[in-house]
Structure formats: C-alpha cells, structure tokens
Length: 344
Image (tube, helix red, strand yellow):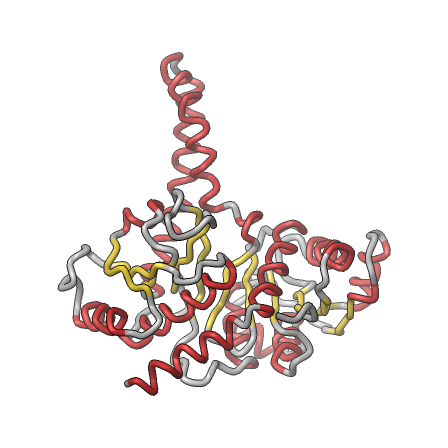
C-alpha cells in the first residue's frame, strides 16, 4: 500500500461551503500524508486558506466557475452548469488527478456527475450508495460501524445486482473495517431461505454459492442495529426507507424525552435513566464520526459527505477515501466480480 494518494474535494458543495471543505483540506495537509485537490472558485479558496494554517505543498487548486445548490434539480443543473465544482471534480478524478472525490453537495448531483464522468468497473451492472451505521458489538469486528447498501442509487434491483452489492460491501468492509471475511446478510421478510420474491430467493442462492463471500443468510429489519452482519445488502428503495426511518426514530425519541422531562417527575427520572441509551441511538445518524457514504462500483472512490458536514466530518470522509484508495477497494471489487463471472 503506497503512502502517495490524492483526494479531490468539492470546495463549493454543502451547507457550510466553502469554509468547511477548505478548513478540512487545510487540516489534512498538516496532519496526514494525503494530497488534496480543492475544486472551486480559486479566489474564494485562496481567501479561505489565507485565514488557516496549511501546508500548500499538499494542496492543489483546480478552478471551477460554477456551483450547484442543494435545492437545484440535479440533472438540469448539471446540464446548465458544465463547469460546476462537483462535475469538474469528477472529471479530474476520472482523468487520474486524484484517486477519489469527497463532496458534501447535492447527493443527486454527485450520483449523476459520477455516473457521467467516472467509468463503472468492468463487469459492474449498477453502482450502489452505501450507508455506514453503528451497531451493537459484533463478534466479527472491532468496528462499531456496519454497512448497508444500496440506500438509493439503484431503486429496484435484479438478483445479480444484489450479488454485486455483496461483493462491493465485502471489499469495502475488509479494507475500512479491517475484517478479513466480513459477514454478509441479505435484507428480507424473514430468515428462511425461501422468503421473498424470485429476485430475493435467487439472490440468496447466488450469494450462498458465490466464492469468497461469508454469506450468513437472510436478515430482518430488526437485525440491522443488532450487529448480526458487517454488511447488509438490499435494493435501494428498501435501504433508503430503512435509513430514513432510523433517522426519524432518533428525532422522535428526542422529542418524547424532552416532553417527558418537562411534565412529570417519574418521567424525568426515566428519561435520565435512558439518557445514555438515547445518546447511543443518536449516534445512528452522527455523520461527523464516519464522514460520509461510499458510492461503490466506480473505477475511483466516490464519497458523499452529509450536507450539514463541518470540517471534521469532511476531513473524516477524506481519510476514509484515502484509506479505501490505498487499500485498493475498486480493484478488489473488480477482481471479485471477474472471479464470479469466470465461474459462471
């Protein structure tokens, strides 16, 4: 694994751009052996850097005269703004100027820009957006974060897509979580092998027979936080609903707790007893810790940071992207899929 790695940052993407992306790059330049390509308005970027301690030998600025806002329609915005920072950054990565991209900008714009400019790995049918979320302690890993994919890039899937997502998750978890043989589960209606429609039952059989996968079988929705698997595979519609429900539950428990605390003494005591558990629940959507969501299946690493990300979260996303590049995640995915294709 080489120490030489470069990551592009969309300096104009996110609620706190350009300050947060530029500050993240400045910190990375001082603390890590990671070269950063800052993509955006050069004058704005230099002005932000002027107020921050940084190592310019590790920073490069690439000009982009346009930016895409979070509320804009992704496809129309990309068509009308070919020089948008998120598109320029993806083109730079495709050209080999960096091994990956991190953006806190519009998810739709990043998905489309990556699809337009960064080639899919040979043999990959669909890319997958993965969500990282904390679980109970797992026997298979010291990492408290597991991977759920897809969570929205491919809304409806075929069996082969789900199999490829399993290989993608395997490659990512083995590098990022350092699990030699990540446990893979298929999200389904029940644990029995015969559960689900033809797509799910076929996907089950394919994963069970696939070389190199530690497939543990079907898992149910309540298994997600239990830590039964390092990687859970599902189609994008189900994954997105599961993720949004988890986020909503965090807010619901928070508001219920606040209401209880204000109204009855017994409820106040109960809320205090539950406080540590609620803090753990809040971690389910603590994007500051894990930085971002990997968009897997491309020849280069693509990481989507939360739109509200500050410098710490974006910095963590850059570190994860660099670790994935150094660990050869795209190459591992390509090799696994080629191995299965030869076997088939």
